[in-house]
Image 1 (cartoon, rainbow, N blue to C red):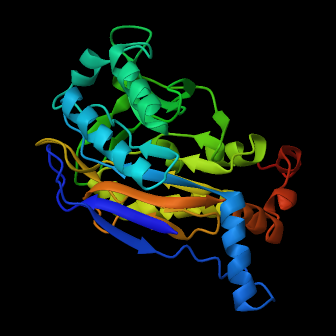
Image 2 (cartoon, rainbow, N blue to C red):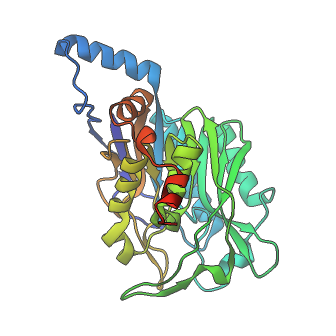
Length: 330
């Protein structure tokens, strides 16, 4: 089952309105030969034993660390109240600068006060946090790392991943971005065990490079792929959902894609459309409003992951690297 919690309009001060919608998470692709009644009982038992609830947040971060933290704190409370054990935040959750150089000025180490605040938030709420796109201080004053941080429910940093693919793009009809001018690219693939399955950790522009996700699934045994993002309005409208569903289908993993949404300032706008997608490519969590601030909640069903992979065993059908070398395609 999937739920959505949202405020109607994204603003600096979160709305007090809280609406709840629910949609079914259908497993009808895998019918059981027994009666509907028996199937319903089995499904409930399976959900209790083989699933865990997660949430993805959508927000409009600004150039105010305290205001963004207040928004994140509110969304954590909503996720906890909904029974979620993991809440995924989008890229740049803690800060979006209004002008060039702002992010470098506020960049900190992982043991600095900004991240300590989020560790305390996770501990006090007894919830895991996926913090995508933290401005971690780089190796020199001219660079930072775009770091995805995983914090457990005791407030401990479990894993970090530095964004591997940097957004150096001339967006058609939009701005020119050159992330590499102030960001150091990561070099390590990261997958980590958790109560929510084995998590494959990525950030935003990584989404366009399927080889990373293939590595996470087939070489690092990921079951759930995390894709926090701040997609531009132009690229998001054209490609965001298509790419996310493709990554889910080709890896047979859940995909949790927390997104920035709306106008951060006069120069920058994000597409939004936070999604949770199952291993069959079905959207099982989505906010009703692409630009709203709030959370969507869904259950990670481990039996569904196993079923999809058993019925379509692509891991057994893949060609090894040696095959492609002998075929003269490398």
